[in-house]
Every structure is written in C-alpha cells, then in structure tokens.
Image (spheres, one colour):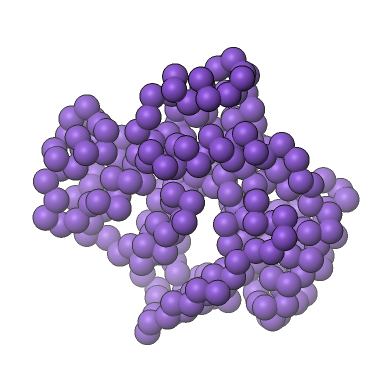
Length: 263
C-alpha cells in the first residue's frame, strides 16, 4: 500500500491480487479539498471510478487516452478508482477501449449484462475499503483471463524505450504481420501502436520538463526532430504549450506520472 497526503489531498494506492495483477495497475482512494481546476494529461489507459456520495455512488468508466481534460480536485471527494493496464479493460471484460475513446460514461452503459451486478454491488456502499474489496472479489470471480501476453509485452517494450523505438523492430518480435499486430493492439489498447508510442514519448518529455529546461535539448533527448515538432505534439496531447503547462497546478499529474511507464 502506498499512501500520500498533504494539506489539500489524501491519496492511497492498493495493489491488486491474484490474476488481477495482470490487468490492473492499482486501486486507489482519493480525497481532496482543493477547489482549483487542474488539467489532467491523457493517461493512455482506462480508469473505473466510484464517487462515494450520500445519495448513492456514481460509477463511471473513463478513457481519456489521448486528450487532456479539466477536473476540480475537491469534486473528487471520496473517490475510489481502478487504474487498468492499457490492455486491462479488454483482457478482463472483453470491452475494447476504442468503444469509449476520450469519454467518461456510466460503467453500466458499457458492461455486458452478466457484469452489471458489479455496479449494483458498489452503488450503495459508503466505505472505500469495502468498495475495493467488492471490486476485487467480483473481478477475480467473473473476469476473464486470456489474450493479454503479447499485447502486454508490446506495451512493456514501448514503455521501456519511452516510445523511442523503431516500430519495425517491434513488429519483428512477434510471428505476426504488422497489420495483424496493429489490429490486436488497437482492439486491446484502443489506439494504434504508433499513437501509443507517441503518447509514451510525450509522457517522458513531461517528466523531464522543468522551468529552466532548454526545450531544444529536451526535444532531441525525447526523440523529436526539433523543438517545433516537440511543441506541436505537446500541444496535441496537453492542449497547451510546455511553458503554459508549467504555470499550471500539476498535483494530480505528478500522481499519475508514477504509472506512465508501468511503475
């Protein structure tokens, strides 16, 4: 268990158990009093969240895989979440992330009928720890366990090289045509191999970005052609330039950055 707290927020990570380790990065509990809006960078993976409220819980599934969005941290009061591996949604529930790309919708709307009991089991529970226990128990009993090894390996290789590898080298690793691997990757992760690689390169650049950073040096170190290429792609994923991003509050992005490369 990993816990972090300061005057404005509390955040606790709980590791998954059993076969869920293959598909889930971690469960988490988040509570904040900060009322300042914060830009959340695209994560590249799906999250399931339970907002614990007095009138019943709101259970959502979010896949802001390639677009940034804003949240008010205090609106996430008593939030329980599942951070899935990029292939985790398809591996466990046979739902392609592409079906909910760049959206946040009720989980019940996308679950197969035999999984919808999961939503009902957590909607009226007001204890975050018990909600996580219920989620784990249900997914361990009913989640599927097949078809993740090759895609998981491809994701881990891209993560390891921070998106800076020749895709032809990745395709040679598997006894499949590039077209077939692309089909499997897109179905499981919800984006192409190339786009996922670009996102990981962007994530690496964000971790290196400081107020005194020389942007040209950072761009070349992260695998961009030049500073202009870096700024353009940064804007595509973040929605703002690197300099504007540095002026914003990034508490939640610092939390998310811990798992950008499978950590």
